[in-house]
Length: 235
Length: 198
Image: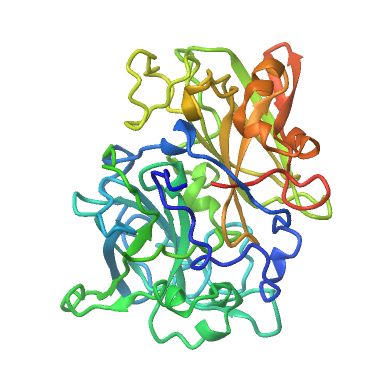
């Protein structure tokens, strides 16, 4: 029976809940089978956040935490498009991002990693996709940082992304990585994604087009949300 | 056709970005969904997120999505104009668990909305749990213990093993300020909360 408006979550593309390599999944992974849920209005609707949710500096992490100067680190531009599986742009949808500073330290109080905080870097921002699904923000290239998963474990540099898409079903929280990072093949969180091509789509591409002369390196990162098989409602 | 971007864990350090009130910034939504102008019965939903050993999950984010008191969602996908929107209610809430794994939402009891074949669903709230150690978010629903008749007619509850159905039904107690519903989220174990492949 194919009467779904949205494609199901494609479990060939997502990591499993339980992953031996990523230790803290051990007690947090649901172990009973997920129960299929027919789509109803409860699933086909969802929160809509557009431009009203975003302040002018929200898409510039090099400025939105500045106190008495500029943050340390390599300035970067991250931009791309949010599409669905049918290649249709997802316009006017909120993207929230957060990341460590250039030294690999989060401003989060639970991060006690012995690396310096940057008084001019907060590390979080928001932007909204345009009519073509495009988005863009400025930041600092995040550093790698150690974690407790296994001996000598360091996370590859990454930026966290949170998206809503068109309804509650299209919610996605993920991480964007950087090309050429030697930590990627040994990172259990990244390698938890079973499909190599799927993993590759979490690695941004260096972009000469996006690079700003004399100012910032450009990285391109497109995001694909679950496909909608009807004329989508654009909020 | 292109393929879905894989999910990754929200990690332990999301709070300053997604629920940043504790960091002096304003988030897009919080755990109070009501204003004095919101229509409907005020309720509180409270619970804890627990892991497979019953230990508190002190770094989870919970999001809820619900209809207003009349049973209408604030979204273009719910085009039933005969059912009123409430200008003082978005239907979306977001919060994080504290050191004891506890969370709460102050909201209103949602009205009933149609399900498949236009049979009414029992009043319910959609819920997403995200946490470190969860490579994907988990989707569930909150139902209400004082809606026994509606729950008995609900097509989603009907297909669940009766022993597991109770994990979705928040138990009501009445306090001076109104109804308080208890909804614990057990990520794993014998009494694991029902999670949906939504």
